[in-house]
Image (spheres, rainbow, N blue to C red):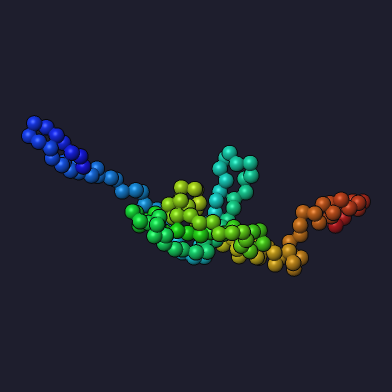
Length: 147
C-alpha cells in the first residue's frame, strides 16, 4: 500500500500481497504419539559414537507458535532414556518439524524393554560384566589345558 502522486492527483494504490510458498510439512513425525521411542544417531563428527534414546512424554499445541502456520504449533516433549531403562532429566520441547531437522528417527527397537531385560539378567547372574571376565582370565592356568 502506497500513496502515488502524479499529474492526475494523489491516490492510494494497494499492492497485492506476494504469494508465499507453504512451508514443508513434518511427514516423518506426522503420526507421533506419547510413548514412542526416538533415537538420535551420532554424526561422523561426534566424539562419541553412542546413539541416544528418547521417549515422547507429552504432545500439545502452542497457539503462539501455530498462529500463522498450524503445523509449526504442534509440540513434542521428549526425555532421555538411561541405560537402566528409566527416563531422567528434564523434558526437552521440540516442534515436529524440529525433531526431523535435528536428525531424530523412530527407534527400531524397544530400548526400555531391552535395558530392563539386561538389568534383570545381570541381577540373576546370567550376564557377567567385563570386570568379572578380567578376573576369570587372570586366574592361573591349569596344566594340561583341562577345563
